[in-house]
Length: 167
Image (cartoon, rainbow, N blue to C red; front, side, top):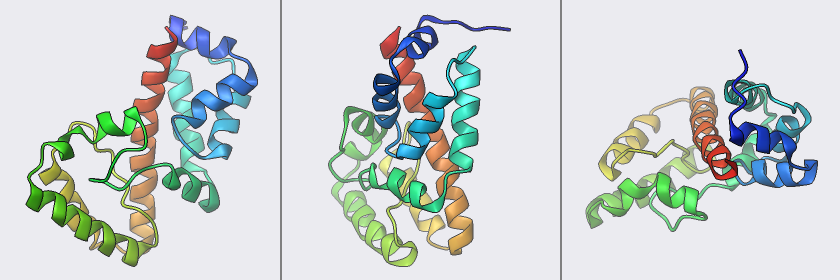
């Protein structure tokens, strides 16, 4: 079944360069963006999202690091409107929660060597802090798998938003 909604049709119609820049705005891994653009055209939104999930799961570590570099720390000033929307729950958190997130971010980065990435959409500052605290107990291999899963969730949300903008 084809789901040729206006957004997916518009995405497929973009030039390679414009599509690459659009996807790079969703995920700052150049390899991720190149892979999604190279697989066009997509027959449906689901096909694009499935491809994004597959590409995310197979990103080399260096590309995963580039994807992480495109995200602000939880609780810090967002880099983009997407980040601001995703972290809206932190903005409403009290000062103690924001301070604890700052301390947790530092501890996380010391332990794992990269930022704490979590799909923050719809979560309060307290929830994000609890997730951070729990994830600090992970071993490095487990945490890297969790990071890939969270990146996939974020990419999915941002790709949906991109398609909505293109509609």
